[in-house]
Structures are given as C-alpha cells and as structure tokens.
Length: 215
Image 1 (cartoon, helix red, strand yellow):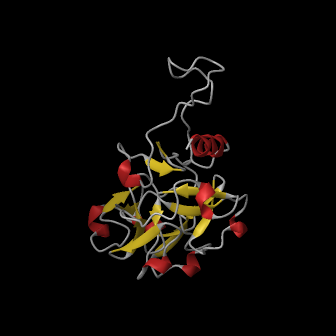
Image 2: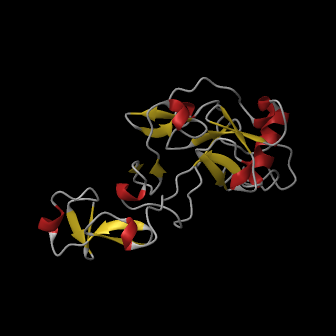
Image 3: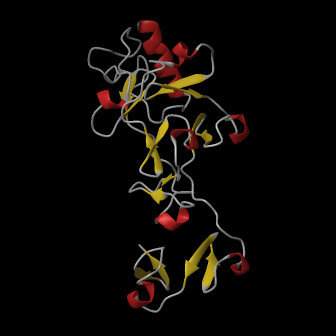
C-alpha cells in the first residue's frame, strides 16, 4: 500500500492531478518533520464519490481538483458547440451516448459529465497495466505531452493527462460563417442588441450585455 501512496504523490508532483498534499518529508504534518518517514496525504479513495468538498479521487487519494487557467474557459452555453457551460467555466460536450464523451465521462440528458457511479478500473495508475497512466475517479487516463497523444477524440492533453476537452469551441472566423444577423466575435457567433427585449428569442441568452445577447 505504501508503494502505491508514494507513486500517487510522485505523479501529483509532476502535475498530473493538480495541487498536491504536502511533499514527502516537508513537515506539513506535526508528526512528519523534514526528512521524516511518513507521507502526508489526503483520505484514501477509489472514486470521486468517496471524497468530499468537491474533491476528486486521483491515484488513490482525495485531493482538490486543479483549477484551470481562465484561458479557454467559457462564460455561456453558446461557447460550447451545442453543449453547456458549467459554473466553473468548463464546457461539457453534447452527446447522445456514452461513447460520444471523453475518458471517464458519461452522457447525461444530452451532455457529457463525470461518471457519478463508475465501475473502478484502477486505484492508482499502476493498476492500468503499464507505465504512463493516472487513475482519476477509478478510470485509467493516459499521461501526455500533446493533444495528439490522446486516443479518445473527446479528450485533450490537460496539464499532462488526457481528459475530456472542456475548452471553448470556436464557431467562426468571419461574420459570413454565422447566421444572418449575427457577428463573429472572438470565434463565436453573437447576436447584436440594444436592450434585453432584442434577446427574447436569442439562443445565447435573454440578456443584452455589452451590446450582445448573453445568459
């Protein structure tokens, strides 16, 4: 068990799971002075459901999910290519069945979300049968350095691990690629407005914000 915990901490130090607990021997635990033998970690787990406070289960330990850089995050559903934008600014892709979703996600009422009740494949990346894996929510995720290394078309290389692509989906490059009455703004087809009344039937949202309809 100790070897698995050490492996989990090392994977996290490499950035695969986001912010990690205190490093081995860092003295974060009163019973673990610098150079001590104990490794301070979060609660042991197999799936996210065993963690609390919005934490995820990564390589056998509960830890805070990595907060993505605001670059590429969404602010409204219209930026998600037919999917939805969650409160954290992450796009959830549209789907009809589970295979339409990235690694570890399932199709829930037409959009992809993390599986709330996965059948665990792993506790740590060591359970995935080869090196170069990270176990998140009981599912094996390939480690990576570029998007091309992710075999699932719904994934991208997110901080060293292939995970479901949450980035904004570009709809356009010029106004001509948008529907009549829309303008291409930062890769998204937007509807111009003067007030909320102009947005009553707008799919981007019913509120006029900075001259464009939004949620």
